[in-house]
Structures are given as structure tokens and as C-alpha cells.
Length: 115
Length: 113
Image (cartoon, rainbow over all chains, first blue to last red; front, side, top):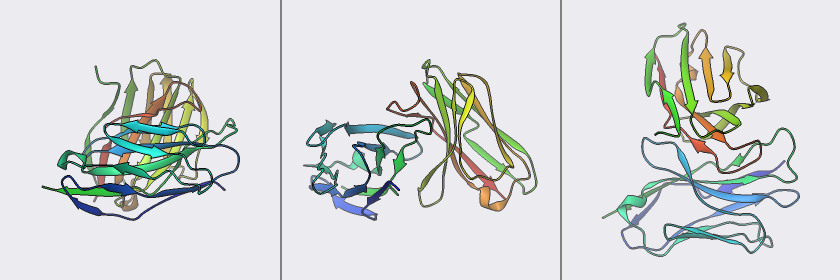
């Protein structure tokens, strides 16, 4: 079945460092790919998405490119801030959709940014 | 003007008790969900309702019973609580089945002692 694999955390970086959180997937068809972020004490919120190969999603300085050849959707940011400390989830939406649509979630990667 | 709100935020109770968590969304969405997040942050879908109709019912104990009185509300009732039920429960909604993004509530932290 479809699955999402994320790098294990926690990932600890200093402020202004470059961030990469790896995400790879297995899926049949042409899934859509997402990154969600969960700040401490809050629910998840969509950070960015890409719906087809070579699409780049971007938001709040974060970027991820849908790479079909490597089945990856790695999250990157050029210069992280303390406020980026959160748990980041990679997810995919299988296609074609059926009546039992549900997102397939990665295990989450905790990011800790030190000042 | 909270989009997806759930109550209570914290729930501490003893084994064997029955408790409910309520969820309401004011986004006009057709589809609502319950997720369970364990201590390692792993997310697992429990239920999905579309226009008050149960769509997804993952393998959860039948002590868990969702109820959707209307499409803006999805409540979760848990009977005979067990230690292993301790987790954070998230309600979420989406415009319709299969659409993104999901909008999440801020979670209910359930602790069973």
C-alpha cells in the first residue's frame, strides 16, 4: 500500500542554519503531496503542497519540490528561526481517489531551533 | 471565530469511566474526522464523516463511538476508558471528501489514570 517515510527526529539546528527534512513516498498513480506543521500545543496546519511532478510548493520561506523520479518531497528552508520549532508531517493523498479517501501520514519530524 | 473548535482541551479521568469530546466547525465543510496522536506524535485516523454519514471507521475498539448530529458537529464518546486510550485526540474538517487542506482543532489531551 501507499506509504510515507520521514527522517527521524529530533532535528536540532542553530538559528539561521539551513534546514532539510527528508520525505520519501511509495504510491501507485499520481498522488498529491503535503507538508503540515504542528506548533506546540496546537493542531496541524497545512504548510505547503504540490499536486504533480516537478511542482514546487512554498510558504513562509519553506519549499518542497515533487520529485517523481526519486519519489521524494524534501522540505527545505534557507535560514531557520526559533519560531520554526515544531513537528513537521509529510503526507500524501492517493489518486485516483475513492470513497475511502484518507491522507497517508509520515511519522512526523520534530525540529528544534536553538538561538 | 475559531474554525475548528474542540472541547475540552484537557481531560483527566480514571479507568473505567465514560467521557465525551465535542467538536464543531464553522467553515461550512462537509467532511469531519477524528484522529488520535500518540506520545511519539504518530497520527492515526479513527473516523471520517461526510454530511453526517460515516465514511471511514478504522480499526478502533468499539468503545469509541462517534456521533454527528449535523454536518458542523462531530462528537466522540469513549466508554470504559483504558490506560492505553491516553493520547491527544484531534478533530479536523475538509471542504468535502478528498479535498485539502484539512483544518485541525487544537486537540484534546486525554489522560487516563
